[in-house]
Image (cartoon, rainbow, N blue to C red; front, top):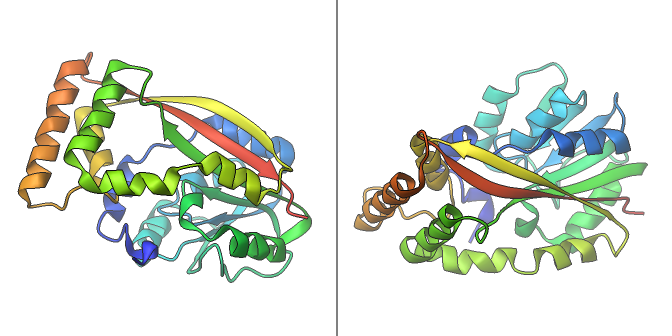
Length: 249
């Protein structure tokens, strides 16, 4: 499976409906790497994290291998201090020892950690901070989130195999930093409408293909869950944002 192509058909939904990251995360990064500074956002997707870096004052180069995602990147982040390049975590194409900050948000589970570590060492300055970030869903905290997890287990068969990508993710990140890192966690609770919830589901790589009976059942059950739990036309998507930072020297 070529993982760089997984999101080609859902890039638009990804850009519109994937959750953002708390301001607290960017404040923490800014305390470690004050601006002006050059940040490289690896596996940038449609630029959700890249935009937060720009708004924090960084000059940003977004590295993304998927052409459809790069198209969304360019649309969402036009700026004189922002560039988009075709590359991967393992082969970014960024100049040697040029980055003050390297980030990889919601994508560490897709990369080869050993090759990526070597590439980040090549790209970063001696003082460069590497930041690995992801949103995780708090499936056990509320009745809505428990029903949401059941939806994925029961109506999105590919979800069960994809969960292996996230198993032991904390341990893998800690090994990547060779035990030398700082950890920060932020609450990230996002109210969403029914349309936003459905859009987010359709951005998932493991969602059933459209125009299939499985897809129709998946969406209908999602609407049932929303109707069951909504208050004033919204449900609360309960996330935690994890931030690991360190120097790869």
